[in-house]
Amino acid sequence: MPLMLPTVIRNFFGGYATRLYPFRDVREPFVRARGHIEFDEKKCILCGNCARRCPAAAIEINKEKNELIFNAAHCIICEVCAEVCNKDAISVEPKWRAPFYSKPVEVYHPKGKEKAS
Amino acid sequence: MAPRTVAPFGPQHPVFPEPIQLKITYEDEKVVNVVPAIGYGHRGIEKACELNEYQKNIYLCERICGICSCIHGISYCEVVERLWPIDVPPRAKYLRTIWSEMSRTHSHLLWLGLMADAFGFESMFMQFWRIREKVLDLLEMTTGQRVTHSVSVIGGVRRDIDDEQKKKCIKVLMEVRKESEALINVFINDYTVKARTVGKGVLTKEQAIALGCTGPHLRASGVKEDCRMQGLQAYGDLGFEPIVEKDGDSYARSVVRCRELLQAIDLQLEAFSKMPEGEIAVRPKGNPPANEAFYRAEQPRGEVVYYAKGNGTRNLERLHVRTPTYANIPSLLVMLPGCELPDVPVIIHSLDPCISCTER
Image 1: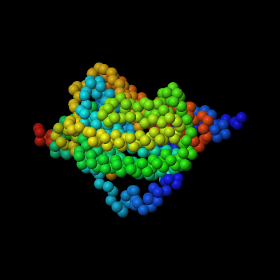
Image 2: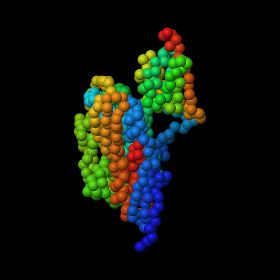
Image 3: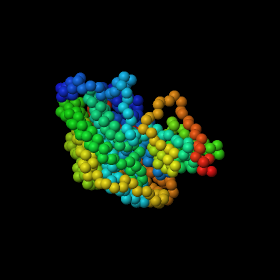
Image 4: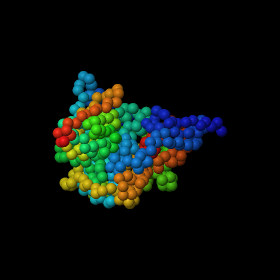
């Protein structure tokens, strides 16, 4: 215990180790942090590459209804979908999603396919 | 003779972060017999790996355990690469080594904190975990996430460490080393810590070998055995030498991990200085061929063994994982009998049990 005293005394004067939220802002995420993924409806052509490669089966494609259904609660933000997308329609943003009470399901209606046809 | 009592220790117990049950027979406050019971956290990951496509298993294998997730992911990639076999670029090998050692650093800091907590040294627990945050920040900066890094892919790695990140990593690692040294001095030399650990849960060299122990647990009993000695990844270039202690008690296990923590930081710094330029990944051609492969890696808790069998399709025919804690649990049957009740949490923690690894 006596050997610990210098560290303990230093801590009295060393300031806070944690951030005083909400009085101070939280740390900005790192530039390349994987926070959440975003879809660009204008670029997507509903090819289904992302849905096939998603390890968590969070993306579902319905070509008949022209829908891309993204189940955000299943997503593990592994970045595979963004890597395999040929049209750069998926991007990984560094900010985390806010906590949610019910599982969000996002439905996109890509316009890229109409343009392509 | 005092009457004997059988009392369950766990599966829900304040000292256990994860569920494991020990049916302990006491004579007054002295332990005379222990029967471990596992199986509370089984998730069937090995079977799920057979049903998944082989690329998707990386993310599943990383979720076998939260603390050693990085090495699980890398080991899976290594074993599947051996099915072709694929030659990974040298820079990717170095990056894998750096991330493995970084995860060892944060795992040992976590363990040192939990151990301090197990014998009631709350202040030290907080200090170790404060240092650990810096290492987790480094992992988030370089890989993108704090715990499940998802950086390793079959054929290499997905992310590179640029010069700016490298400088920051070196700066922070030097700080972590300096701060850890001060706390390790307390851990190794403090009277109160020694009173709780010296001579508790002794495991002799012969017993450790006979029971098939691995990792720091084995090295604390005087056996020079470490999977990094194989020289795989970049360890061959880094001049790795395992850390061995002789006494085999809880104190020796603590000392091994304290020294390994500093060694892991040194290995990272050396790897940063020697890291070659070049590609970070190669693309595998086709599906894994019908072949078998085997890979051993050193996790923070000991040896992990990956076995994979391919059949030429997108799915593996079999994936087997042997984790270190499963090999170390039988040693409790030797270490616990004869000890006092208050020493039970300390001895169990000196093993660094990781139950989610054990049960998969």
